[in-house]
Length: 143
Ligand code: THU
Image (cartoon, rainbow, N blue to C red):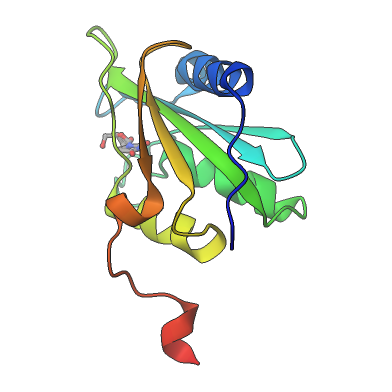
């Protein structure tokens, strides 16, 4: 699918939203706060944060929180995601998504899907999903 790239104003807003969403993260174990903001193809923003658990494995990343919120409300077509992460008491990083979140993105997003790694609304890196998950396994394999 051909990707419609959002304009600079929307990218800035998406990145700022991801940074702000770090405040909502529940991270008593890692103290590493991640926020995410997912833009749907029709211009809605769904937010997410990481939510940890004492049993560790039930922990969910910020990106999957945002994606699952959106999909559970009927959205399956996405234009971009912004992610912001860093230690609770440290500096923000260009925090790249974990492998599981890359795989979940690949379920719904095309190769050109832009992933913004944000420190602020103006300071970010962008990578396509293809760069982050080359040669991935997808529904095409099951055909
Ligand atoms: N985490 C995310 O939320 N997204 C990522 O892309 C990387 C890792 C979370 C999971 C866990 O709560 C904490 O960061 C440390 O791994």
